[in-house]
Image (cartoon, one colour):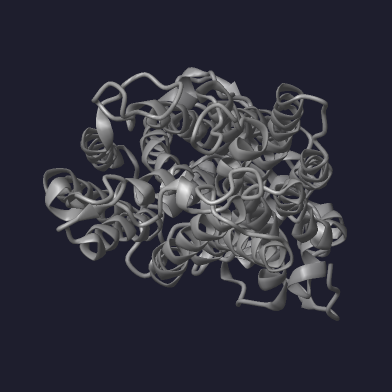
Length: 559
């Protein structure tokens, strides 16, 4: 293992180089695409209702039925959960590089296929859309464990957290990008088509050409992924996988020589020595598996901490993101549907989401990038959950004072409240989600576990998060409905109301705060130290008097 130790030590001590930023860009564009595809659907769901579910006998715009709305918003999350488990496992079994390109290719093809969801009936179009968005989710899910693992294994020890966080921060840019694209496309169509409100002309308010708007928005999700596909396929396998899992130190040296600009070929050995366990039992370094007692003893509590915090976070994070439009309408920030045309509604919903992303979501990500290696992951996660809980409690107990009462002349609007304060508090929950657990729950599982199980364990943690996202996406849609019979949206049963939904989210955030105590701090420690592989290597390494620490600099070679 002396050769492997030299390579991994050099990785940990390497200065920040161009290949670090190249890897961030290549992996980050996948996350840009992930977030774009997952969240852009919320900007066009009301348009889908107007296009495919308008009933001329009713004096209001068409809306997606509850089951259809749940499926359109949530089916990609179901696919994501599957992809995280499947590709996380494959990343450990086949190697990170071998399956990394597959996820991007799936996202490109299914983004385009989603945009071409045609049919003769509304049911056919929605069914086709949901089918392709499920497989889009599988590709998105695969990107989570693979991107996190690859970045953690490429990064140096000093700035590892910032590099992983920078990859994940592209999620914020993807959310902003999806809203911005919807603004641009809807504005272009509005400028060239009649745009009366539904109240003025119910038919002309939703022109047939509006059907192209949501298709173009979804199709654009393939572009950033396609731009980086070639470069992703050219990336070498990570040295940690090659040395610790494939046990090919010479190949690891060659691969890292390409990116570190250092030649390790004279400083590697491929000797594997069994570990002598305390009870006299002799096992190989890679013998114990995910379901073994040894794994549970060393990493069971850590895996529980990673899965529980990510699960609880995503209930709140995805419910707030996917249903921002409903919250904006409930406080009167968006006009009533009748007062807008279909394209105007897309524009205003997208503008509201873009503002929230620009002033709270995106800054939260990049503050984490700046501070995660300074104050640590654990502290940031605790801060995030604490303030998410605090602001949600304030929104709950000051809900009516901030929202106001229905206006006498227009009951759909609210007068007398403080909408600026409401939106500020709401935006701060997004800021502290991202300067907090939304980023740290992504970083920590990529650092804690052995190389041979790292991608699998990250996939399990991420899948637990997506299970929470599914709960949030499906549950919040129903829970936030009015408690008063007749005031809920068409087709929905009565719910617990928005105020009580905020209270429920407050409790969930508080639970995330306490579950963070199950997670250790990973800042400033090597991956091998955190996973226990260093300790195992010391026990298995035979005495040696050879000098295996020499290496020589060679000419740069980019991937």
